[in-house]
Each structure stands twice: as C-alpha cells, then as structure tokens.
Amino acid sequence: SADSLRRRERDSVRASAERARAAVAESTARVGSLRARFPEAAARAAIARGVDGKARIARSGDVRAVIMSTPVFVWRAESGAAYKQNKRDPAGAPYEIVDPIERWSSWKSLVSGLRAVYVLEVTTEKAPWPSFEPGKLFDIKRGDVESVELLRDGSPVVLDQTARIAAVPNVDAHTAAGKAVPHAIVATIAATTFMPREDGSLPRIELLVRDATRPGEPIRIRIGDSMIRRLHDDFAPWRDAIAGR
Image (cartoon, rainbow, N blue to C red; front, side, top):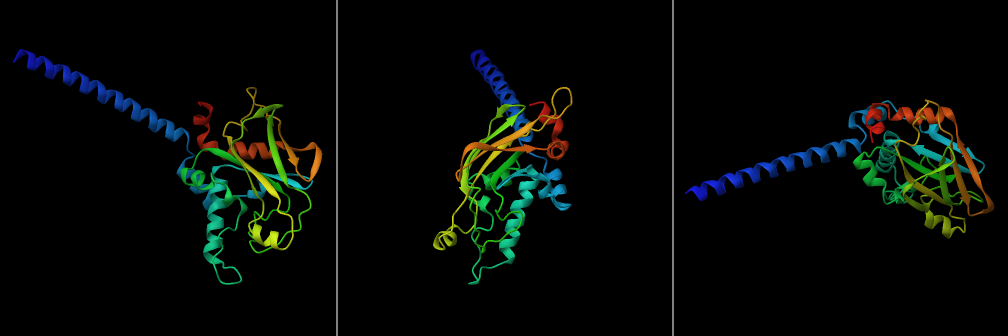
C-alpha cells in the first residue's frame, strides 16, 4: 500500500511536470506564430482603404522592382482573384492565370499565412501588373531578369524563397506568336530590412539586377528614402515585435 502510494505520488509529479512543459511549449509556439505573422486586423484595414501599389515601385531603364508588404501582396492576390471571377477569355472560359506571380509556388501560402515579410518582384517594365491583361501580347526586347542581389548599406540581404518565373501570364500565346517570354525574380525579404539604422537615419537600399538580354555590369536600382519610409511604416502596427526578433 505504501509502495502504491509512492508510485501514485511520483506519477502525479511527473504528470504535473509534463503538463507544465507542454504549457510552456504551447505558449512559446503561440508567441512565435504571432511574431511571424502580420496582424489580421491591420492587413484587412489596409486592404479596405485601398493600397497604393505604385508607391512601392522603383525603376531603372527596362527593369522595375515591386516591393510589397504583407497587406499589399494580400491585396494583389485578392484583386487577381476578383478579376478571374468577373472576367472570361474570348472563348468564354475562365482564366487560369491573370497575374504572372501566381506561378510562384510560395504565393498562396504567404497570402493565407499572412507572414510578416516583404515580397520582392523584379521584372520587365512592360509586365502587366498592377493592371491585369491576360490576353495581351507584349513586345519585350529587354527586361529578362536573370538574377537579383539586394544590398543594405552595401551588405547583401538574404532573399528567401527565390524563384525565376515567366513575367507574362500567357506564355503559350507568346511562344505561338514567336514573341520573347521575359522572366522575373520573386523572393521574400525579412521585415527588418527597411528599419532605420541605430541612429535613426534611413539605410541605403540598392538592387543589383542582371538582365539576360544585356550582358555586362548589373543594373542598379536605388530605393528612394520616401519609399523606404513608406515600406517601414507598413509594419507600424507590428514594429515592436519586429524589433524584438
């Protein structure tokens, strides 16, 4: 009887310790999940009032860079979905793709997960977005993006989930018409990329872009201070969590 009582006490202590460990693990996972996501309410508020995508586009010659915070790329995905719901191709069939970025394997998971990241798209200046023209054929001589490097104050910034995709929605139609099919580079950028330096000044952000149609030195795209401020402010509701990472 005494042995049985001691066993029960030991089992109770072990069970209590296991519950405590599980609670800590659950709490840690929950906090980690929240810190890795953009707030749903903030994203929806930005989408509801409309998002100025053009304010986040920088250009150099035949190449442009589109940098989208979480609300912007959610808004872009929802705009594309709405277009497909309301438009049909000339044969009356629904469009499979209206936005080239839909080919990016990470696109849907980023939108549904609301991860707190920036999405970078470097593409030809003649790419259709922010309009949707899935039936149009483009005569594109330059702007076939081969690779991209992002620099913050001269130091490389890691680009995650990088992919090279076609920069037009209707690749088969372009190929059939004998027209060039340009490409774009898409990737995610950490939410801390556009944070000010420790002294409060803004960092120097540059993109080095290699165009397959233009050998030699890479194309440099400088991200202006006003755009850096706007991108940083997109994460204002989430700034304390970002700073603590």
